[in-house]
Length: 356
Image (cartoon, rainbow, N blue to C red; front, side, top):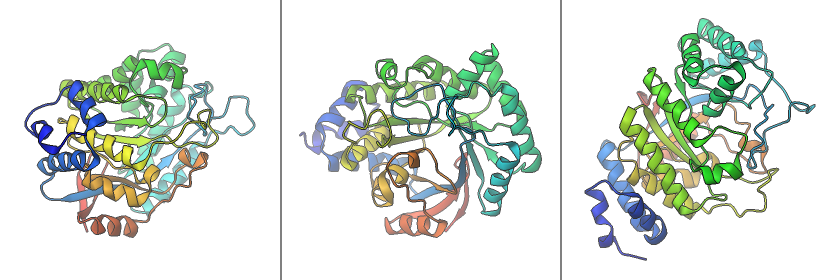
């Protein structure tokens, strides 16, 4: 392992992929943490750590993608498949509003029986009844699949969703943005280029989005660096990403259960590298959902300035053997304070709503 003096230059200049790979493979954890924390302080000198109150509504679990890491999906013929009706979704949104939430995250499987009209009608109903709710929904694979079954372009689909009330697009479905990895991991999903096109197009049309990375499965360190380079390049071009959110694969009821899960140490190294490499992203999120709150708040010292969400609902990771612990607002505030930060609630766009 190299010492701090070997890497201090990364605080003075934009690093390239070779340097990023060296950091991930050869810098020890405290050095990566120190460097990432210095970068975070530049972006957030006020020492505030944020969170959002949201609800993750999985409107259908029917999916034809067949991703090897997913325990949530059900085939179209499965008796366990479901589609939530509009009335049920509106009830969930009402509960979100009553709870003080601001963000509605809707994601589902690639369901061949749901046309674009299902999505636009749903968005209009939500906006009509809850105009104050920010709809952060429908990841790139869903958009690409809709374009395919409707015979439309990606831009036409996004424009239709935006006109119906969509406010921003989540970064889900990225997994690892390396086609070598995707071809094995999620061959039924959109390609790397299509994922990128969705986000570039959304930004062009005035929508924000997030970028994500799900790692700790079959990828190699160079694939992680390739992923970071791709999202940094898009952000250079558009500036439309609000945040970067890395998290780790959790096994249980998946086709990858033979794989050893990534350690929390490796998670923190990748989180720190993300903060250092993504010098054009203001916000980096630490994952208490896949890492536990104890590790999540440690991530605030490894470059993250956001601790994700106080969720009313989580179904996807919970479909594995991993027990998801969902904090209350007071738990989130207390955890952030215990880590030495000022807790603040934010909205979808990372505007601060209130400081605790």
